[in-house]
Length: 213
Length: 178
Image (cartoon, rainbow over all chains, first blue to last red; front, side, top):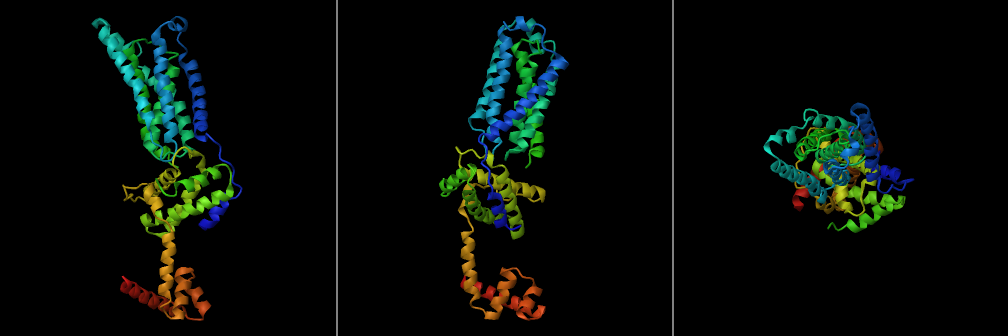
């Protein structure tokens, strides 16, 4: 086919392009993933039985705020990286803030606590399963985001994959927090973060292969 | 900023709103840049043309990923560069141009090709008329040796020899000019 013919074919009957297509596509993927992941949490793990009294404690909210802020900044970043030439800009810096805040808080609480409590603060009662459960709950969101990104046009595939992984991990963490009864900041800073980071690494590895277009 | 940014961006904004004429004009302008860009990096004209078409199609199907608050030339360049790296990955060659940026894509265009064509015409006129016609048919219009032979009532080997001699003379002329 001649290039001039191709140009004629592409420009004939041109449809207006939808505005905000990138954001909508990513939100659609995210929404689909959240539905599946929430169902998984409900049927497989179940919400924590002490939901009502726990809601009166600040740490209950801390966990959600930690996951939600990373998810929000991750979404801002992936909305950029899903476009050709997209740079992280301010979002990349913002993404580090919740982590820094969480680490500072964990160190402070750890330092304030009597030494006999230290092991419990670090390991809680679920350290063997926490990061793993977060990763499993994140997988449907991860798959949905990758599906969404394949219709978009990331040009930095490793960065886009890593960001999608962290975003999936953060949303998966948010959902997991409805089940998890841990309330020590050091525990959250270690095991929640590890779950999200694992998803980020998975995304970075798979992005180069699965996000090609 | 790239000189053509405002003009091309205006065309793209109209294209996104569904203006087919603006879109055709935009793609025609972009193809000259893209062709020169790929030709310089790939060397082979046929490969460059394939990649050019692939890039135009990719731009078309993913045009909604352009955010009008950002530079359009950077968006095009990112796609052009991505498609080239992807091409090298598929063909197991490595991109040799680490210092690639939008200026490179938009600094060159096929207007250079138009100039080159003028040079060729000027040189061709120094040849005998019969040889001129042969070279024009075989090397520029792309006829096969057999087709050219039939057209001019010559044997195939006469066409080959005529073209070869003509090109040799041209090569000598170019050497003299520089």
